[in-house]
Amino acid sequence: MVAVKLLITFVMFALVLIALKKKINFAVALTMIGIAGIFAGGLINGTTPMEENSTGILFFDVFEYFKSVGIVSTITGAGINILTIVGYVAYMDYLKASTLFALLAARPIMRIRNKYLIAWATFVFASLLLLVIPNGTGRIALLFGTVYPILLACGVSRATAATSIFAGVMYLYGPTSANIAVGAGYMGYENFNLAEHFVRYEWPWAFGAILAGSVVFIFMARHFDKKENAQGGQAELKGKKIEELGIPKYYALFPVFPLVMMILFSGLVGKLPTLSIPCVELMCFTLVFGFVVLTSKNRTEAVNGGFEFFKSMGKTLTNILGIVIGGAMFGKAVMQIGGIGILLQPFVNAGTDINLPLFIILSTIVGLFVGVVAANNYVPMTILGPVYAAIIASSGANPDYLILTMCNVPQFAIGMSPATAHIAMTSQSSGVPIPTILKRAFLPQAVSILVYLAGACIMA
View 1 (cartoon, rainbow, N blue to C red):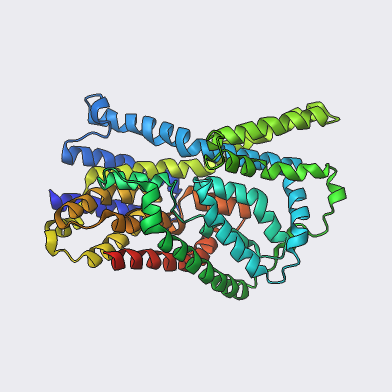
View 2: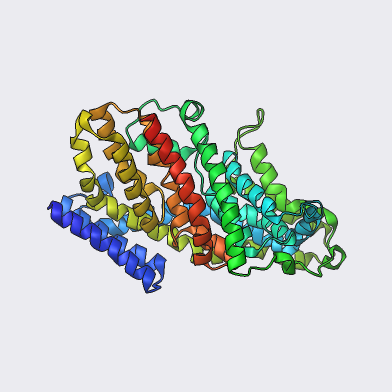
């Protein structure tokens, strides 16, 4: 039976790679392979994806899972964040507020002659924004609605500007990172203190990874801009004058309104309540929409303009969330079958004789591969979590060290996969092809991974 599990796991990954090579719609491919894999895993292991909510028939349970977790949980979870942020950004484009903001904000920044320094600052800012906006796709959408037009106006090429945002968003760290807490739970780490972990173990390697990745990013941006003869992005706004936009200058405040509100209501400012991203976005849209309608000469047109918010939601659901749903189904299939856990079983059986640095390196490679193919970071954590828990129990290893590779590293799989919502949103927002962004972002992320890997191995 072990051989069968390994074979099915191998076939699943092979089919995903074939789908990529044949340019088959990735959302469909992941979903269908996932459905078949969940069913196969249920037959082999005598389990059901619905657990205590089972209908009693595996075939039905697969589609109940598809509905309740694959679709409903995805849309009501990460999906609603993406939909509301992208909707607001689209409304800002319709109002020309984003263009106005870029024209005004670019004026002082243009005094910086080195455009790569501006791109570097964007990379770092995108990574630090995690502390107040934990959702990656949310940060991408916000930055494309605010910072990206400024980068173009300052002469940064579209590919470099897009990659600075995309690669900068790929870091996972911090005292408020729910994903790390979830990963610790998969490891069976009881009484895990996220803030203490960050202060005592994580911060040197997290900021070291950001610094190393951002420096490498500059060299890669220079190299590829020269190789591809990439032109500066001034053409995007060339010839546009503020007066020609026909809107009041205070409209430039609208694009940054949600960003300011998210920081204020992130739980880090005084006694202000903590608000969710969708809550902030919907509130900002409603307030701005109401103000625009009340101050507009043509109120009918102003009211109809609000539909841009909802129209963009529909496009996003089609182009981006389908991939997220497919990734959720494929990830569940990999877990249901259990083939990856079998590959790492020899380390579990080693007990105190385990070569911990070797295990850390191999499990990191496995986690990255699974994450890239599954197009998310949760699958590696859910698969590796029990393995790490067993090794901690048998060898007495410090779980805080292992979290660096168990939780922080798989995040970079999102930045290396061609099938995530993050890369789809970045490519769609910038018009830069997905392969171009991925090849530019690869080495900065690889260097950052090595920093985390070194941290885990040194402390282990």
